[in-house]
Image (cartoon, rainbow, N blue to C red; front, side, top):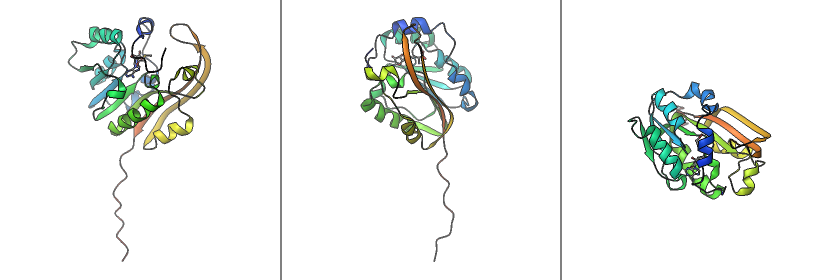
Length: 206
Ligand SMILES: C[S@@+](CC[C@H](N)C(=O)[O-])C[C@H]1O[C@@H](n2cnc3c(N)ncnc32)[C@H](O)[C@@H]1O
């Protein structure tokens, strides 16, 4: 799989769709308020989009893979709570949002394309809003194929204006959803954006 590919996820969708929602959504549940707009980035077949809509969000589901889009439209196309956008992250200007959810999707971009998108995305999250998703660590076997990797220090820097509520860095040999052996090195992240620092009321020195 090429890192910038936005086609070819068909076998993944077929294998992953019958499985339960990714557990990070349950971990994020205390910070998913259901108020305002939630982005589902790399929405795939739209399971997380429906989960977010059921919490009360107006959902924007972003998905460029033709197979993903047809599955997404079949599941969510008639759902007035969910708007579908056929666009790649690198061409997307995220709207202001209260939640940005990206289940196993952002790291398919190469770093030079992912970095500016991540900055736009984290900027678009309102204070009090939440980011939920994964980034790869440098030892993940997909990094050799061009997927983006982040060190711990880079994750800390990226989320400097957030509180990291969940940060599980998992490294293990296991298999993909398709059963292929793989070395995983993943940062599972739930982070809430801090309020801007309060105005300094200290009287000026005379
Ligand atoms: C592993 S699938 C995960 C799908 C879904 N989030 C899920 O949990 O089942 C990765 C998704 O990211 C999407 N994706 C990959 N590169 C992308 C890009 N550059 N822009 C937008 N979406 C992308 C793929 O089309 C695919 O649907």
